[in-house]
Structure formats: structure tokens, C-alpha cells
Image (cartoon, rainbow, N blue to C red):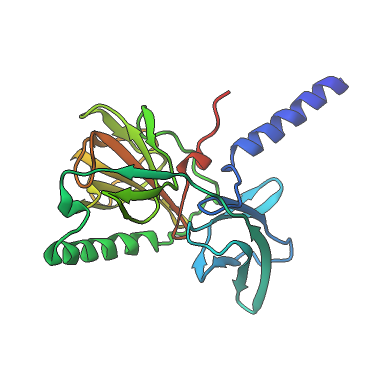
Length: 273
């Protein structure tokens, strides 16, 4: 009898662990921060004045905090806010030294755009940033279950320090998955199509709002099969692999944002034994 009870307990703990993303309190990582029991039910958790998701488990409430690649290494402060309530929680961000990647592009305007292209990029970037800042409350307070949007080799991991034709650019804020042109791309988790577009750098793109400030961006598609406002379930087809925008070959770029911080998408995928 005692052995059976032990097995059941371990099963519950395992299920609880699988329900959360992996924690990595580093640049581009995720911090799982337990909230104090005395915090009001309507408490909001903010990092750099941006709301972070809160989930409820059998162990209480936990804030799922995305850590920007550009964050300052060292102590960071989360603000807890509600009506007539204010508090803070400190946590430590560790450095992470990402490797370099040097890419040569024949299409040099994708490295040094002209004024018209820069203006187009600025408009598109503002459109995308508005989506990233969206915070849609969730009634379930559960963490979404994620799957890989397409199967393939990881051609460019998250966080790479990138150089295009020898010129330094922003770090790689997503995961590149090499796959055949025309291969189906699937929604990585439940959500709603927040934006679609054919962008200068990202090519044909779908942005999915998973709730509570969690956003997926799927880029370089050859075809988009969804429309803005469409409700998606995990595994629904959203488009086809391509190499539109700034791409050297067919692949999918999957970017994941939590509280407007781009984080490593692999942290939300349950490791396979």
C-alpha cells in the first residue's frame, strides 16, 4: 500500500513539472517565480512595466517571466500590483554567452536596405511590436501545451550573435528549423491569429496570440492558410515552409515572446526521453 501511494505521488509531481516551461534564468530565458500567498487574486506581475503571465497549480500561483536578450545581468525586480496593493520580488539574471553566426547573402539590400526599404521595415516592425505588447487575459490560468510547429534540423539556434556579410546585426531572437519547401507548418499551441503579413525581413509571417502576453511568430512561409482573428488549436495547419524575406534557403523561423521578451522556444517544449 505504501509503495502504491508513493507511485501516485511521483506521478502527480511529474505531471505538475511537465505543465510548466523549463526554467533558465539567463538572457533569453524564462524565470518561474512563485507568488506570495498574501498577494490578491487580481494581482499583476510586471517586468519593465510589462505584464507577465500567471498560472495556477496545486502549489499555488507562479509568474512565468520572459527575460529579454538585452536584459542587464544581475538582480532584477518584479513589481506586484493590484488595487491598494503593491509589492516586489527580486530574482537574479545570469549571463549566457551565445555563439556567433556569420551569413553571406547575395541579396545585399537585405543587409543594407535603402531609405524606402528602411521606411517599410520601420512600419512593419511597429506593427509586430504592437502584437508583442498585447496582453489577453486567460480564464483558465493554465500554461499552454506546446509542440514543434514543423519537424526538421535546427539550422540556427536561438540567441546567436549574427553577422550578415560581415556586418553585426541583432541577436537571433528565434529558432530556425530547416525543412523542405512546401512542408506544412502547424500551430505550436492553442491561440488566435493576431497578425499576418509579408514582411521585408521576415517574409510571409503568422503571429499567434496564446494568451497572457505569450506570442508565437512563424516566418519565411511560402503560403499562409489562416486569417486574422481565426481561433486555432494546437496542431492546426497555418501555412507552408518557404524562404521568403531574408532567408538563404527553405526553413521556418519560430519566435516566442513572453511579456514582450523574446525567449528560447525550446524552453516550452517538453523534453523527449
